Length: 402
Ligand SMILES: Cc1cc2nc3c(=O)[nH]c(=O)nc-3n(C[C@H](O)[C@H](O)[C@H](O)COP(=O)(O)OP(=O)(O)OC[C@H]3O[C@@H](n4cnc5c(N)ncnc54)[C@H](O)[C@@H]3O)c2cc1C
Image (cartoon, rainbow, N blue to C red; front, side):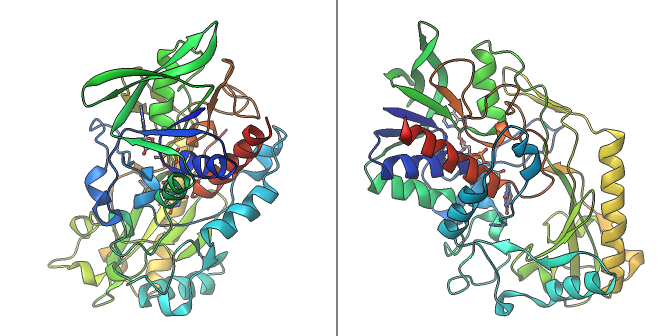
């Protein structure tokens, strides 16, 4: 029996692929099984000094994602002998990655694409896993899709269960049990009761913070000292009646050397725009996301510290300046441009390949694996789900073969 801890990006694909191959799989998820439209209620709360976004429910953070799907970290993973070419092809087809049809490119997004092109930037439509025939273009992806038009890992968990896997939701794994220094079970809490389940293998897919806490509490070394979180800000300004807030979000992409830019509305942007009586419908805004240096730390109680380096700030400044040029070219009055605070939605790097896990994602403890954003060796600075899915497919093939 293989126990999977966490029903998000890594755990979802792994469960599906293992169950499809007839393996006995049991998935533990600390959050509940919810309708996608209610996912916004399950954002985690972190201490005030770190603005980190992640959700706890079946589907993990993928359920509030924008369904942006790009390949990342190819050369960095090659250094560890990992070539994900065929896994990427498999998962891209599985989740239906494609550029949105023009019918789903709103006016604000088109202004972004045109302005970036006129400025000579490297611009394209964002590859997405959204079904246009179901999408109602409400701009609410980050709340959880009201009509289930975008892919989330919850789909994979549903499939895994249909294929015979067991899902235990609202069950928090608190420890990995060892027998003769090998992983042989897990300890979990459900309805206030602590239970132990014996398993042959355990894969931690609890995300970069929670997987790190579990490993750290087992006494493994080198854990959680190098957290990154792909910081971002949303920069926007006044453009009367653009109605960008109800478009499909992040449907365009500019790839710079040290940042990526994508049209994005944030519910926090209005209060930061220096223009009287501005309404959400009058804002055009852009997300600026950068790869950060891995200067974060997760404590054994899950407390997260994150330091921003001079390089992080420099990259962010380059991205913000470029976003400002695009907004101005798109018709935004530059005197009205403002920005949200610095946040992170892609925590990773806490159990990195080559440091904590080997290239088969196994830890120094036999039969204990990690398969989530924790294993990414450095910050991708771009959407990581596709890379996590490809790594999970690779691990599933390995475990299916064993
Ligand atoms: C608003 C938002 C938008 C995003 N948009 C995109 C996007 O468009 N494209 C992209 O590539 N990335 C996006 N991301 C990032 C992406 O969602 C994450 O990087 C990805 O989901 C991480 O996968 P994971 O497997 O590491 O963890 P998760 O998907 O977060 O899954 C971890 C799961 O483990 C569970 N868990 C934790 N601890 C325990 C425990 N002790 N016991 C049992 N279960 C546990 C959690 O509840 C959670 O369900 C977005 C993130 C956010 C917050």
